[in-house]
Image (cartoon, rainbow, N blue to C red):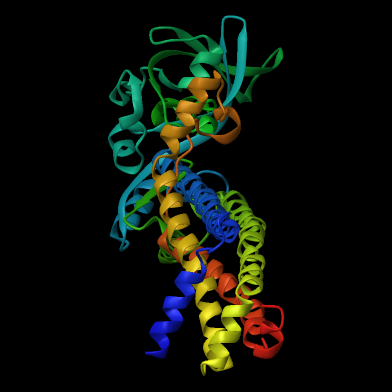
Length: 414
């Protein structure tokens, strides 16, 4: 029964009895402040999660999960390495490749790029580039054809399209009686791919691995690229493969190549959580002002309750429950609003871009033109838990002041 009347009084005292209803307005603004703070925090964390997740998905669609290369830059017996890789648990595909840099020239335009020599049938198994061609097909990269597939941004920068020819200039030179001359070969553009990541679309070209060996004067592949069932086990898998082959290889994986990028995303996410949590804390501590005003307004009621037998713990529980109700209402409504906005953030951003006639994300800077969001429930629970704890702490001082009210002193001026 005592718990019931404390709850009843707590909900009743949140509604001001004065005609102006100022206390009720302050209570609503406290709830709104907490809700907006939580919503902003959830949306920002969801955007950071979505950015990292989308970046990882796009990256894994165009790059290998792990690579095994010779220490001297070539892997002459790549077939044995490929067969051993396919026997390794968790490896679903292994493809040889030649990787080097070159200059591509078309008309008056010359651009540096990365050239990857591939075997089309094997490339389809290891990455998703074969499924991301907007023109042509990867099967056109036959040995001796000297065909090339360009990234969409690279093709645009060169001003080249399907059917045009480009001159590939390798960094290695050829010794002639007149001196060292650059090694050049004319290639014909037979396809264009769009991966969605600017760093690859603007600086990657695919050719046949056989043609790459001729251009770069190699006697084998640069290495073997692996596709794994679980990309997060890439470091352990490629290391186990190198040891099984007797060592003497250079191993790498997508986590090592992009460790600084993903670490910066995690650090940024943590810093944003701390900074925005301060905003939530300010909103939570508005509860102190709200409850202090309620305690001041209800001095007479508190005195009457005390004279009727209510103990200080009962008074403290009454006003503590008010703060808990405000905190709970703000936390629940803020979490619902944050999740709703996070699920529709791309639509909202595109609508705002269309309204303002601008584009917020430059793909040349952010590697993507959209603003994805992914809600992680652990983040939601962490935000809600910390906020509710702050709200509960904010109720202690006003509730303690209410419990220390002396009936005779409070009724003296009534």
